Structure formats: C-alpha cells, structure tokens
Length: 325
Ligand code: NAP
Image (cartoon, rainbow, N blue to C red; front, side, top):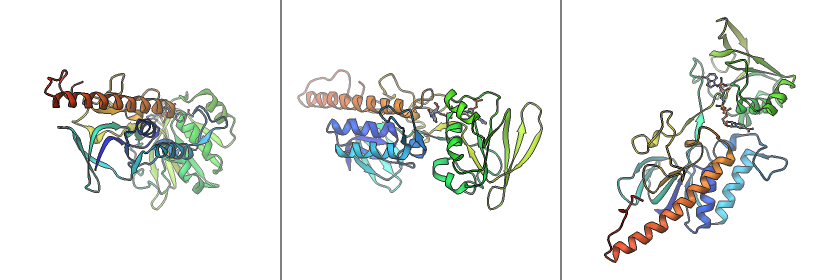
C-alpha cells in the first residue's frame, strides 16, 4: 500500500491535515491510532472552538472533522504504527498488524496522553474507579463521591462535568491557586457539590476490586488524611506520544517533537502538528491550525519533489540534493 501523505493520529491536528491534503487531491491515509478522534473526542463540551455558538460535544466535533475529510477522499485505517524506516524514500511504516505502508510524506499528529499520578494503587485500579476520562465514565459514578486531581482547565472542566452525576466532588490541587481559566474557576467555586483540598497531593489509592478511598497529604503541614470515596480522576497534564520517534526525530527535553515554524521536523518529508509538538497552547483550534500548515507544507514538498525527480530524470543536477530541501 502506498500513499503520498500518511497521517499518524486522528485528533484535530491529524483530521485537519487530512481535510487539507484530501482537498489537494493527495488522497491521504489517516492511521487512527489508540484514541480515534484524539483527546478532544473524550472531552464533554467544547465551548471555545469557533463557529459553534452553543458549544459542541468533543466526540461530535471529532466525528464531524473525520466525515468532512472523508468527503474529499481521505482514507482511514484502524491501526497503530509500530516502526518507521526513514532511511530512504519512500518511507516505510509497519503497523501492529504487520502491514507495510509506503509514504512520500508523513504528518505526525500522535498527540499527548494523560499524565499518570504514579502512586500505589493507580495502575491496579485503572478502570475500576481510576479514570482519565470523565466524559466516558462519569455516568458510572451516579450518586458517588469522587476526587479530581489537578488545578488546570481539564481538572475543572471535567470536574464540573462530573457534578452532573456525583453527589460530592473533591478537587485536590498541589498549590493554593488554580491554573484554570477564571470562567471555570467561578463555576467551580459556585458549585455546591465541589470542595477544594489545597496544597495537597494524592499519595495512594486504596481498594482491592474497586476504589474505596485515597490518602491525601498536605504538602505544607505534612499531615496525611484518608478519604473514603469511589473514584479518582487525575487531570495533571499530559505527556507527548513520541516513543515511536525516539532516535528518528529530534525531540526536546520533555519529549515533544521539535519542528521549525513550518511544521517541518529534522527529516525532510516528515512534518508534525498538534499536541505532539505544542506544550504551550494545546487547544483544539491551534492543533487544527498546525494540521492545516503541515498539510500545506506536505503539498508544497511533494510538488517540489516531483519537479526535482523530473529534472533528475532529464539528466539535470538537482540543487538542493533530493530529500534535503
Ligand atoms: P495543565 O494546564 O498543564 O494543568 C495541569 C495541572 O495539574 C496543573 O494545575 C498542575 O499544577 C497539576 N499537576 C501537574 N503535575 C502534577 C503532579 N505530578 N501532581 C499533582 N498535580 C500536578 O493541563 P490540562 O489542565 O490538562 O490542560 C492542558 C491544556 O489543555 C491547557 O492548555 C488547557 O488550557 C487546555 N484545555 C482547555 C480547556 C478549555 O479551554 N475549556 C479544557 C481542557 C484543557 P500547577 O498548577 O501547580 O502546575
């Protein structure tokens, strides 16, 4: 199987890249990856994506983006990329199913995953009371008591979503000031189901078959308290999904892919966009913008490449060397 543009990942960056590449008649192939639709598809309500006056569900937004790209000829595949051979053109990608796909260009939009607390009990009780997706699992906590960890937009947004179901919600934050936008802070402070536990971290999650409680430590006093409850929702940021690219693409000290201001990585023909690159803005709209830029760059790269190949076939010396522009 060969594609002029293979897009790895299907969040707003990948889906926007697919739309633009499809409209450039490049018939891109999107490899959906572990989380079809990306993190936005696990978000309850998106109120800051322009064009939706009353907001839109995250899943619906991602689904619409995919349908829009499909309308112009983008192809989709449910698979994970396990290795990339970029030593020659075309690049060779091998999927978890053992399939080999060749690509003239690659757009990496593998996003980022929720950061784990890294405390005892978290791994054992994952999906048994520990959840990283309030939208997916909130319903199972009807009438229950849960804790959200973190003080950013995700913690407050998803915490507020959980108050539709739960009776009591604690937000444990390591400082006494929130990072979240003022509008979300106001909503959380005025919600009678929400209680804040400041300057504190979750040290342990208890339970055998399911979560039964947590140990919370006050970082200022050193005091620990046990809190009986039913669910733990960590929202303490993200780590970029770049393990596949170690040793291949240039990564920064936090593991994000380094690009220039045209979404180009250190390998000509490989572009990157969205949360896998951006640890500053990390919005659906900025990811979509980067996806657009990456697809336009890939389109221009292919056009130049084609021209150079033609000239080379006619016996002309190519400057710069193939694969180096
Ligand atoms: P974030 O903004 O990086 O916030 C992470 C939070 O977790 C911070 O409050 C941080 O504390 C805390 N934290 C980090 N590591 C921790 C640890 N090891 N233990 C305990 N607490 C820890 O991440 P996010 O909330 O997931 O947001 C990511 C991006 O998505 C942001 O740009 C955000 O604006 C965006 N977003 C936007 C919306 C919206 O606009 N409605 C919704 C969701 C997300 P400190 O504050 O002390 O650093």
